[in-house]
Length: 83
Image: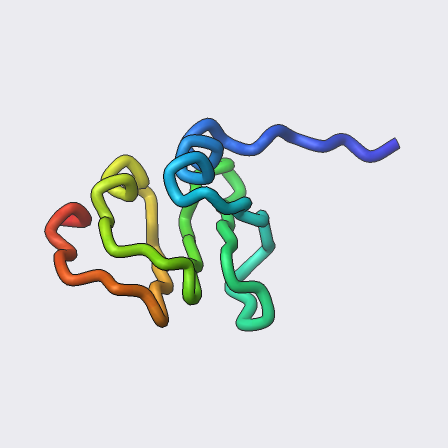
């Protein structure tokens, strides 16, 4: 029997903000457009928002363990929330 873990609360909150589901993947995958990936300690280390209509990065400020962030084809103009 497979054990399914719940999505992290931060991902669930982000889904509400962007109005789209975010799929968990093992690593960056160009074939998937809106995804997240985690490390062995369950930290969210990557987000991929290809063409996701994102223009405000402030909701991402809580993702302090990010190592990879893909934002192709979005309308981001201010990256200061990531500082």
